[in-house]
Length: 134
Image (cartoon, rainbow, N blue to C red; front, top):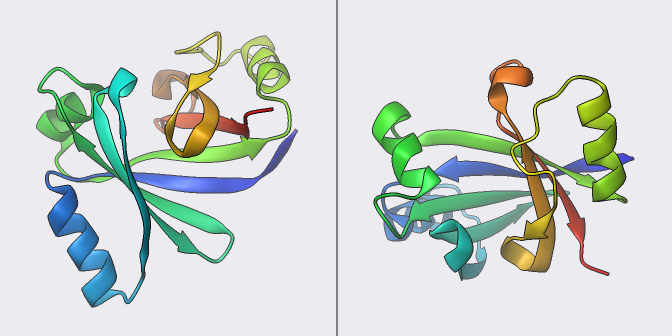
């Protein structure tokens, strides 16, 4: 079952510039910076209430983030929902007609299991499910 919004992913051309904006302009503190080699991305997380902001910078021109930036420019990339059972959540979404990008969760940033739903089946919003690894 979905528990809450976990984070909002924002694609940026430069993680350094993005972090500077969120820290200097908004007064937030960057909690962590991490590279997720499997997704060819570098991330930075900011805690805002119960939700995180995740900045995403491509580390390879063929990464999904690089392609997103080329097509759309900087901005909101995805919304992530925390679930207590990611496998069950994927099954329910698929049964309801959502197109899965990932049928099996994989390790993402912040030591979580993640999987995405295709935006063509989610009203144009790239949707991520995430769960703590057990």
